Length: 125
Image (tube, rainbow, N blue to C red; front, side, top):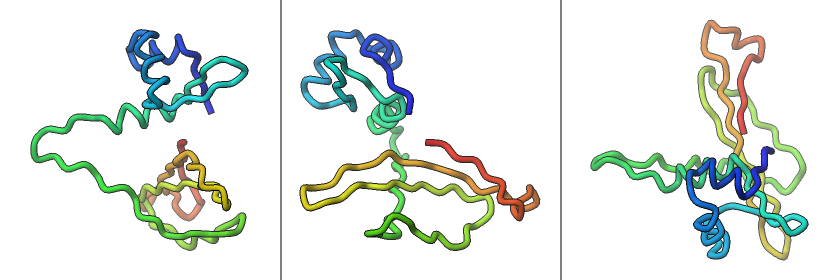
């Protein structure tokens, strides 16, 4: 995971550091304080920016992917995947004290005729 400093994060989202600190104080931006310094996960900043996109009239935001399984173990048997299809998955840690949402991961299986039988795919976090 790629973390940005306060200065880097402000540049990345094109805000002043003062405004970034206001967002941190209000809990409006994804960040973590480590040894007295704020760190901002780049991927979470990307998702944060995308979540606030304005859409032209008539454009409907995509529904979030469905939850297909709730597993209490440490593994999950996915089964067959369709060629040329994008998938999203996330692992959340859940215990009696609550839940911590994990990062979303995406991958796309190879399309027909592109070596799908070879297991070719691409993945991003």
